[in-house]
Length: 242
Image 1 (cartoon, helix red, strand yellow):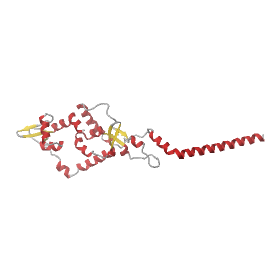
Image 2 (cartoon, rainbow, N blue to C red):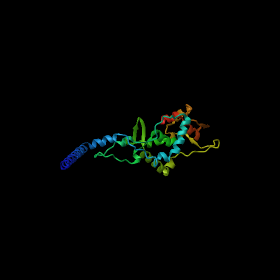
Image 3 (tube, rainbow, N blue to C red):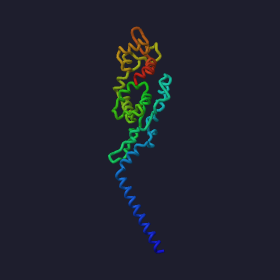
Image 4 (cartoon, rainbow, N blue to C red):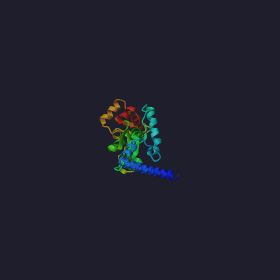
């Protein structure tokens, strides 16, 4: 009986020593390869998703849908258009010097497709496009599709809201005139050149090619709001503006 007890305790001590040795080996391996392990884990897709609740994608979706429907009517739409809002996959793999995953603000990691941004601004896209000239860091290509970081789109919207309240913009904005023979506001050639950002020769060419409607009163040429909208929503014009 005593002999069996001695054998039992001896086996128990051997097992304890083996477990201790195994633990030390595992700990040493973890110290040596932990950074590589974390890096590999970061390579696998995570469950990170864009912030939809706070995104302007949700706030302005009704405006975008309205402009998208206009595109559909013009034949400038297809079912294979890219996802409008995604999470930047590059944010999944960014690690700090210690190998920890970097946490980005959602405004940075949220990506809005260029097509969605164009639909957001609609007929104003040609003018707003100049404000959308951004640093390379705010432009992201995912599967050959161009996206804007949401933080930059928000920044541009803030600029537009500020300018809308400024005196200088109200001074520079072309004010439609009214002619008795026409039941809607009209613009002069000077107004149209400013709105479309074109020269007089280009404006004349657009009229000659019947791409831009107009009305002539004697020597005076005027353009209705409908003439302007028909031209802006022309698929050919929109493709050139993109």
